[in-house]
Length: 65
Image (cartoon, rainbow, N blue to C red; front, side, top):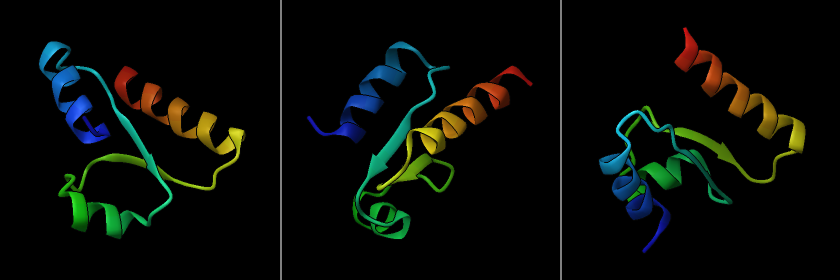
């Protein structure tokens, strides 16, 4: 099972779950090759712990609003 498949299964059980995808490939490569939706939450490698924290915080802030 890859990450996209895992996310699909998790979302079936928890529809409000937010999934953050990460990869070493560019966003365009991921969307094109794996068919992810345009509104996917995504952070590309390499990233710092601060960048990851900011991305996760942004997801929580968006959900809370």
